[in-house]
Length: 67
Image 1 (spheres, rainbow, N blue to C red):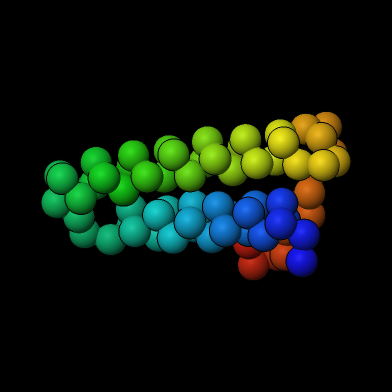
Image 2 (cartoon, rainbow, N blue to C red):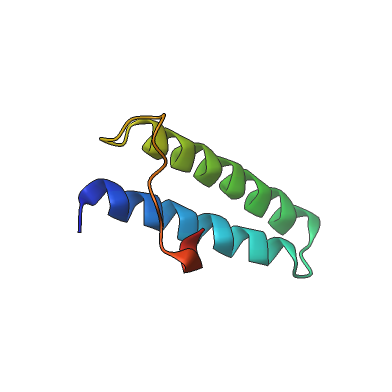
């Protein structure tokens, strides 16, 4: 598997995991931590998509479970 695809998939899995955590009962400290990590992962995903070999104009297709 191409390294850039693997990186995109890893960031997308992390985004999904943090979004699911936000649905759970978290205290204020945990909530801030998860929100920060989610923001960082979304940014990393956007950068990885921008830097992908196909360029920012072409969307890389991730497996359905990761979109």
